[in-house]
Length: 229
Image (cartoon, rainbow, N blue to C red; front, side, top):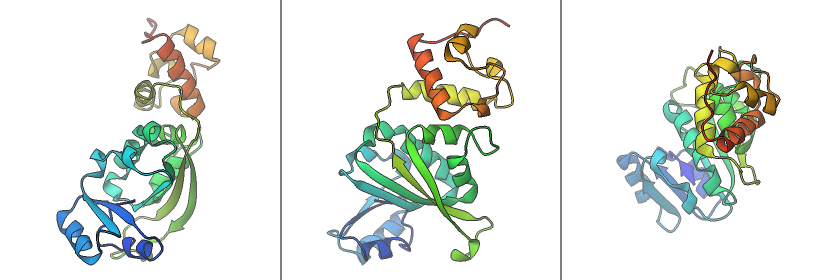
């Protein structure tokens, strides 16, 4: 499956190598041109917004690719992370070309400047590798930013946490990333002690695994309340 084929710059070389491809394109005119160029037996064109697409209907071993639109690349990545539990075992891997800055945030380690909400939400569900950079000269017209290709492989182990709770906790944490955890998260002192986490750390200092542990703790106690200051 290709996300956002546009004028088919990636679609054509893909179809030289594979027998059948599904593409998701929101622009009806571009979708119509692709449908006219390739028979339906080889190219299935889905006219839809990728943010509304349910990826759980893909066949086993499917591979997703795309030169993602840079203006909505982050929402698309969050959408895929939300579907990760449902597509587990179906998706072999995903390869995307994105703005270099976004790829750096995706693969960033904790306690580094690029580490944030996107890093945590993706790294809890995917193993990711930045493959190579792509300079502006590879595009027509050339953009003002550098790009990079990244590979995402779904983690085989099924998550044992509540994804909704994880999303809420990570969102709260990084909306106040310069605050200490004590002031950024609705946890009690007993929670920090049980988790072995220093409440004086900042949200960027916690690993994705730490956020999963906080999520499990929060789920067990329903909705932990913040202690009075």
